[in-house]
Each structure stands twice: as structure tokens, then as C-alpha cells.
Image (cartoon, rainbow, N blue to C red; front, side, top):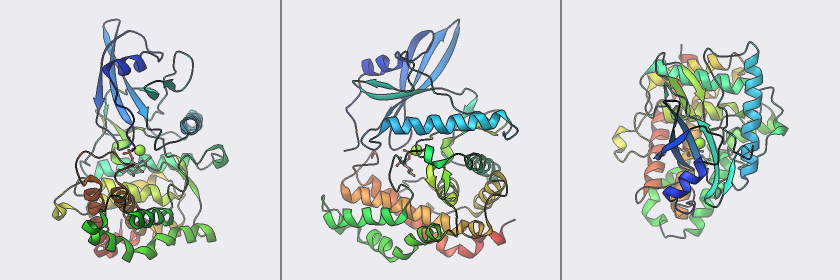
Amino acid sequence: MTSQKPLTPADLQHAAQQFQIAGELRDVRALQRGHIHDTFISTWHVDGEDHRFLHQRMNDKVFHDIPAVMHNIETVSRHLRRKMAGANTLDGFRVLDLVLTKGERSYLVADSGQWRTYPFIEDTSSRDHCSGPEQAFEAARAFGWFQSQLADLDASCLRETLPRFFSTPYRLQQFEDALAEDPQNRAAACMPEIRFAQTRHDMAFVIDRLLQSGEIPRRTVHGDTKLNNVLFCNKTGRARCIVDLDTCMPGYSLYDFGDLVRFTAATSDEDERDLSRVGTDLRLYRALVDGYLQGTRGSLSPREMELMPFAARLVTYTIGLRFLADHLAGDVYFKVHRPNHNLDRARVQFAMVAKMEEQAEAMAVSSVS
Ligand code: GN1
Ligand code: MG
């Protein structure tokens, strides 16, 4: 199972206190965030003021090589910081700094697990739902900018912490393997979803073929461009920081764009049970296209631009495959909070793909602007 051993309040306090943080620890609280790690916020009192920090116990059942994950984060952050010292910066944008441990390391190895800590960036917030086209534009611009800044980072400096993470053929294979094994006898109860996945088998190979033939370039991507991985300034609404660099690895540009659409332009939650609510908001979609094109600053080729609507469908399908595979495998990867949670998530992704197929014409990038 993905879950690590349960944490006691003493584990939390102990982990937080191993980092270079001044003041007196007031409290540590859980933050419901993401499907992989365990996240907490601590408050520290110093000189009459409160300061907050974000701690994550990293999931070593998912990321088997935590030193490699931390190496990638440090490499990407260092590169971005260097670029921002030049003229390439977005207004008010900042790179997240890791807080070092008292032993001067970027993460802590404790009995309770492996931990990292960031300062909590005050006066910002992250959003699970998009407030409108302006926010969608801003998120896409920030992720586009982020990716364009990684274009001159030597990809051989990054480790492939999750092999073939962005490959849809690999996700299809994982799904087929889970289906063949069906360890929990769940397949019979999700035949419509299984059929949906299998009838779209062909689309899985499109991007890999284009990468192999060199028609589209490999690029280092963020790899998890959910809206809630952007911190927005509470005063101006502008993007201040991009978080969650766990999946920064070589991939293809449109993965980031597709994942942006999947999450930010969604008309429902990722695990909505009422499928009549599921869909893609075209106004938000257009704002994402515009923001992404602006953020990547002309670095996308015409072929990549043409593939933007396809990428939205493909990434949504791919994440759907991952949720369905995990449901069949017995919920061993993504955290679940209710029975059939991964199946519900897969259903939403597939319903969104079906809607996007109907909207394909309206999503073509030439018809945007
Ligand atoms: C996972 O845990 P979180 O929200 O950062 C997953 C992403 C998926 C996402 C789906 C390492 O991200 O790839 O797109 O769930 N991260 C990993 O919501 O697998
Ligand atoms: Mg993530």
C-alpha cells in the first residue's frame, strides 16, 4: 500500500524541530493536499510574531529514490534562481527555498519517514477551483514561463525519479496488467470504464511516435500543473510561486498544457460523483491557451500548438487510466478517502475526455483568440 506508518503528534513535533527554524513551536496541523505525500503546517512564535512553515513527509512507496527527488528539486530551483537574477523574471515571482535541517541537509531522515520543509509564503493562496478566465490565464502564463525557463537546463542533470512517468503507452500497459491480474475482483464492476479505456487505445501512441520521429521536441516539464500548484498573491491575484517540483523531468511540453486543462478548466471536482457536472469550460480553456502561449514566449512550434486540444484529451485520458489501474490494483498508489474513490476519479476523467471529443472543433487552437 502507498500509505506509510501513521504519524503521532510527537512524530510531527520532532520532525518540525529538526529544521533550521527560529522561535518556539506553537502547533502543527495537517493540510489535506495532494494524493501522494502527507503535508502539515507549523506555526512558530518569534519576537512577538508568528511564522508558518510547510512540512511534507515524502511518500517513499511512490518515490523510491528520495535523494534523487530532492536532487531534482534543488537542481531546478537553482537553475530558476539563476535565471531570475537576469532579465527573465515574472513580476513578483519567487522560487521556493527549502529550509535546511539542523544538519545542513535539504531533507530529514527520521524514524517517522523522510521530511522536507518550506517557508509558508504568506499573503498568497492556492485554489482548487478556478475563479475565472483571468486566473486561468495567469496560471497558464506562470506554468508556461516556468517551462520556458527550463529549456536551457541540461536534462542529463535530472534523474528520472518515476520512470516513463509521462508515457501514455506505459500507463496503458499498467492498466492492462492490473486488469489481467484483477487482484480485488473489481473489473466486473467497471466494464464501461474498461471499455472506454480500451476503445481509445490508439491515441495512447500518438505523442510517443511524434517524439521518436523528432516532430515534437522533448522538454523538461513541471509535470503536475494543477491549479493548486500555483500560489496567487492575495492582493494582486498574480501568480507568485509555482510549487510541487516532484515531477520536474524530461517529457513533452504539451503534457503541462494538457494537465492544466484537465484540472483548471474542469467544470467539476476531480472526484465528482454526479457525472452531469463534468466537462470543460471553453472560456477557461481559451484563457489557458492564451496564457500558455504567452508564458512559453513563442517557444512552441506550430505542430505543438496544433496538438494543444489533443494534449488536453490525451493527458485527461492518461490520468483516467492511472486512476482506473489503481482502482483495479486495489488502491496502491493514490490516497483514497472513500470506497471506489479511484474509480470515481477515473469516471470523471473519462467523461471529460468524451466531452472534449464532442468539443474538438471549438477547442482547435486556430479558432482561439
Ligand atoms: C498526483 O499528489 P498530487 O496531487 O501532487 C500525481 C499526479 C497526478 C495527480 C492527479 C507523483 O499529484 O501525477 O496528475 O495526482 N503525482 C504523482 O490529481 O503521481
Ligand atoms: Mg504533485
